[in-house]
Length: 559
Ligand SMILES: [Fe+2]
Image (cartoon, rainbow, N blue to C red; front, side):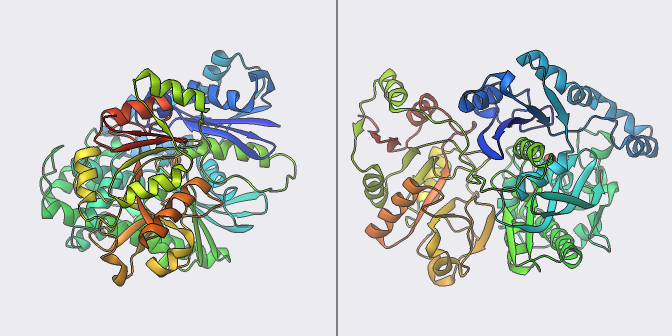
């Protein structure tokens, strides 16, 4: 049974996924093809890739699942909202094009591909939930989906057991943690729906100086929910500026884009982040008390807040936490396809490839052609992992391109810039000279899985960089380039099963240096992560990166 899932026409993250008989065959995001970050257009390239990878024609597809319901869902709630905030709410009518495009997704799909088979609109949060539950190692557990808004809910709670997902409770928009964080992102002069992680990075530099104020902005509700004090916001009435004048009166003038941020801005980011963590912790604790499981699965865009996830793991009541590789909206394409499979008949869950390496791969011929086209003279090496480990030991920076591309915002060792994390200056060199991004932003370490306990005091897998850990005091000096200012690391643990070649590289580095860790950041500069060998070559040529390692080929700069 071939099922295609897709998402588009939201505010970001178009994607498609092919599931065959319960297995993920292919999944990718449209931005990788159009080269427009977070592209939300109809994912024609992603769907074509899925068909190509599966060796299918469109007539071979049994079911297509789209991860939004039609707009008449929760219609009464929408009408009440419009009336409650009338006449300011009239500004929300500008979104009706987006709404009608979602309603029309089926026609767009059928017209584009000449498809005549079954098509299903699916609940957005249920797709988020399916994306995390079916990829998780858990037979059963509680699910928490948090985002801006999906089918009028911003928070969805439920349980997964065997092959079934059951909803239990929702928090409805406009009370939204995603919109809360996006408004703050805009207030701090960053780009909404893309730069939220910058706020998270900045928060580590601040003090919790606005604790009381943010307790008034975001309130905890008895019973595990939360409520925004909407007088601080404008997003719920369609305002272009998502925070209100009251917000600016309380916290001071907003930052303009590109402005050098002050201690005040860092303190605001810190207090807002901490308040978000408190609310997530409280919500999860209630879920624990009512769910009867030790396992928690986190999904939805807010699930990208790895600082909150790490805190949940350390301070929350759940013993085990799983956040998959694709908790953002693109992941609902994967969830929709899986949900389409498991929701009909009583199908047993097999072992699903949860690696996130679901994208494009290329043969050596294509790589050689891409290198030759730019006049590059590669050396084919016998052991690329060992050779690169030696270069990393010597302080060289490597653009590393191997295997299938990752799904989601994190490079997990197939499309990465790699460097030596023991060199203090490395963070500044990569941030400023190569990635051309803000100095305060941290880099992530990739560590051999078996060394997690030795460095972070917790024998816990974190294969997707979705959890933040505190580094042990005695290890902090060893890894200056990947430890954030507050002593935390957004860790990727790597096992042989996750990624054999990447594991081998880190293992060689460990043998050479005694450090089982390398610095890993995504292979891109102010653009989506590179997808093809041609993009890898083009990106390499416009950087000061020392080497390009692509399959078994090694290219040195200026050679
Ligand atoms: Fe979502």
